Image (cartoon, rainbow, N blue to C red; front, side, top):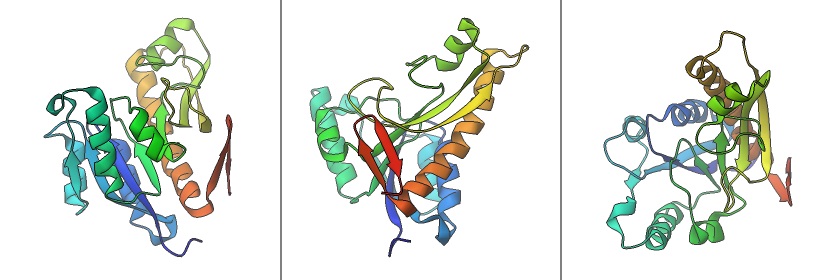
Length: 205
């Protein structure tokens, strides 16, 4: 066990259900991590309210406040860096981070995708899986890189596609599996350490 909990900064854009799962897990000292800040790209969202109810500091960095995407990315990086994270978790964060962010937090920023990467990247993973007719889909936790859902895979979980599924029912089951995978894997990364070696990620250092 590390001598102190790993420091997590979580970035959100919406309701923050994955954030809530992490906050609940961090309430147990054995989990090995604590959320030290929650950032967002917009005001007045439930994700920020969840953090505030738990006494976690929050910040908002909006793209529209800056003259360029690069300036926003640098400002976001500065806000995150102020909390000295060991790991940054994008939990429903709907913006792509840029070069400055990756230069500072690359290799220790993770995100989820509601499909089994490399299949069905982008915004419509469950719908694309259903349209393609696959029998199994799922969720992926990956190390963020400069692409869209292209980073090295940390963990995956499978979700069967039922004959009577529509996009909503399939997505709800994927989100439940994704949440459990995220909490379990982030905890292991915090407690055991991890190594990113090219496209392979090994838990346990």
